[in-house]
Length: 182
Length: 89
Image 1 (tube, rainbow over the protein chains, first blue to last red):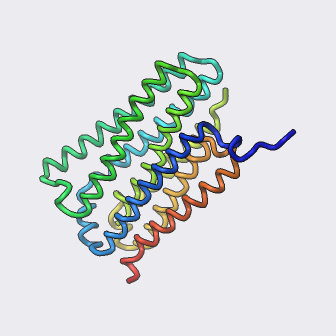
Image 2: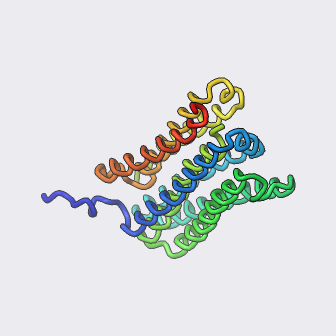
Image 3: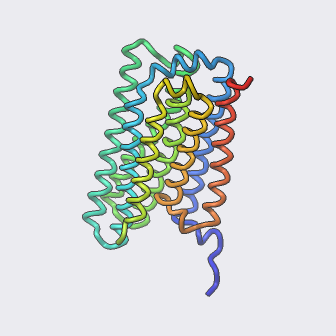
């Protein structure tokens, strides 16, 4: 039996992996610049960070991780022919995405109520840009998950799930750098 | 259909996230900023590896998994170094 080539070994679509690598590089670059600017004012960054809602962000981490599990299970269910269950898992994953956005929206609204905007401090510039851009990806992911729950071809579900896991992957890197490193 | 590896991955991700949350107390950072920073980045690195391996399926593509692991490790080391820079300068 001939061994698989590297490209054949890669799960899912090559284009989706190019997107995943690109997005991780973009967010990774953003986090590297954030930490580089922090070197010039570590106390100011720490004071600004203390104004964030770490509990809400921590809950959002569990929400996204659980949503990722449901999206991954949906692919397995669809492969096994359990279409109704796969659709249910996708809708549940999308609903958890909405929960994430609701918590994130409440967090942004609380900042606005405190008079905190993107130009309050360099920290908040990066905070709003990086978490806002990530939230936009979550919103796009929710639409994708609902779309493939409707048009539930195996390949569609795999692609939408891969996008959703990418959103998850970025968050587990973004969360500790923005919210936790003090 | 068996989702057992996915459930195990999810449980590990939740456990690692709770570990990060436990480290988020201000007292921890005031006393041990270097150790807390290293621990938080280690937990983030491990969570990202689990998502890549189990959720995105790289556990079945070992060569790709090694490549992604190397890139991810380099990014996490760079971010940790930048975090630690103000503490040692």
